Length: 72
Image 1 (spheres, rainbow, N blue to C red):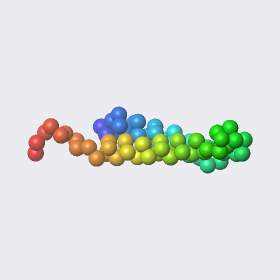
Image 2 (image 1 turned 180 degrees about the horizontal axis):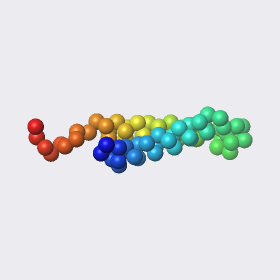
Image 3 (image 1 turned 135 degrees about the vertical axis):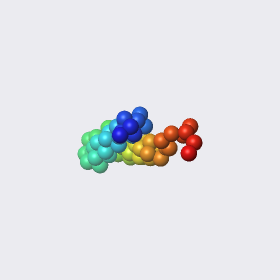
Image 4 (image 1 turned 120 degrees about the vertical axis):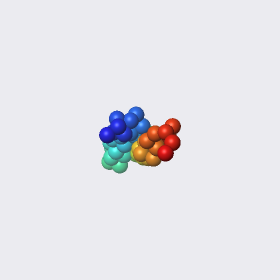
């Protein structure tokens, strides 16, 4: 339960949520929005990067040891 409120998990979750929103938005951009961005699907690329960062943060939060200072 303590890992649920860890800062890395919260930040990773937020990156994942916003990454999904931007990826979906970028995947359905119309021609006018693409013309504004000079043909670059900026929302799609930003969303994919945010998804990758979110996965890294979540993996980092899950992979850490519980008590690194305590020896068994």
